Amino acid sequence: MNPITPYRWPAPGTQPEHLHSPYLSSIKRSPTRPLVRVPHTLSEITGPCFEPQLVSSAAHDLTRQHKGEPLGERIIVGGRVLDENSHPLASTVVEIWQANAAGRYLHEVDQHKAPLDPNFTGCGQAITDSEGRYRFVTIRPGEYPWRNHYNAWRPAHIHFSLFGPAFATRLVTQMYFPGDPLIPFDPIFNSTANENSRSRLISIFDWESTLPEHALGYRFDIVLRGREATPMEEPKK
Amino acid sequence: MSLQATPSQTVGPYFRIGLQWLHCDNLAPDGVVGERVVVQGRVLDGDGVPVPDAVLEIWQANSYGKYAHPEDQQDKPFDPGFRGYGRVPVNRNGGFRFATIKPGPVPGPEGREQAPHLVISIFMRGLLKRLVTRMYFPGDARNASDPILNLVEPQRRATLVTSPSADGSGLLEWNVVLQGVNETVFFDIGL
Image (cartoon, rainbow over all chains, first blue to last red; front, side):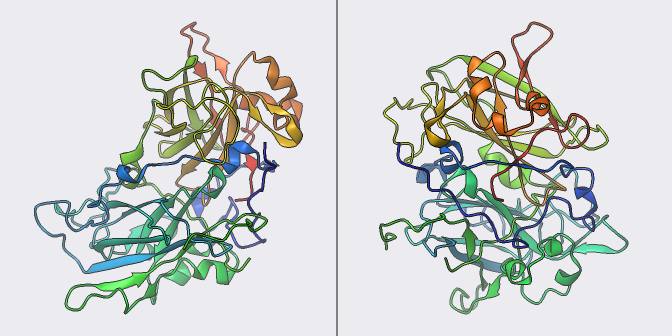
């Protein structure tokens, strides 16, 4: 067996802790005992692999899953998936889900009094290309109230889920929109102490992907953990 | 070293919308080699209340102890029908059940063998980042020398080992207890 090259541990404050008491749901669901630190073994540096055919080429367009077009502002969300060593991560699955333009999820638990949209489910999948790029077409999700505290509102956001190359790189996160006035008040956004790190969660308005007379573009680059030591070979271009 | 990793955020309560297309509670379709096992259990919060909105993800080697991943260079057979991946949401009562095969042993630190195990991620509303744990098999003599189990204080190791169901059905039972006396051991893998 080759020796294991572990993935890097995060610098303090650059990822949330499990317990973040302003986010009330974390209080009864966070472990109270210290986690047991383990070295990365073959079990952690490997992870599920999915063949590109698993993701249909239409799955990236959330505006074409029904007879009609969903209500709301059509947007394009894209970017690159990289590791901390700036290597693009090719052929990795990206899953998203979101509320509709009125701030309502197509889920029985969501009882917010805002209309469902018969033309919007709110989920999509993509697989990154050889340069780590992905792209979705969707609508801008609405903000919505939640019960965390008095007059609590979630900023507009899209949920992202990525596997990366290993069990150790699996990431679920949320993407926010630039200029959203709710962001500074959101305990979930604020759960990461380091300001530079959490600013990674805010997408950037992007002229390059904006399509004339069609849709605004937002760029959201996602960085997964990198290896402790840079591999010897150059990343594939 | 140049970029800083994107922070984790909770899956929230509505993850099923985005994750159900890859649900998989039968990891070992017909034809996969190995001893079949069915695991069931519940996820319980700090008040002992079942968590109705959690999802487990499973990663494991095949029955020969080989992972379906290019970095597993061991000279062991592939099992073409076996990906080693599972994604299992809990039901309204916090219960889950999945079917798989018992994996073979895989190498561990310093050339020591690891006992057969599954690595498991747990996501739910309230968890800003996933929890990571492991599931081992009851009565396997190799558990005693497993290098990861041996990092855990002895009285807590039982939380990582499934128990044969008391009803004699052959099911394996394994609960995820988030807090309290029987709190499951969760691992720091650097998240």
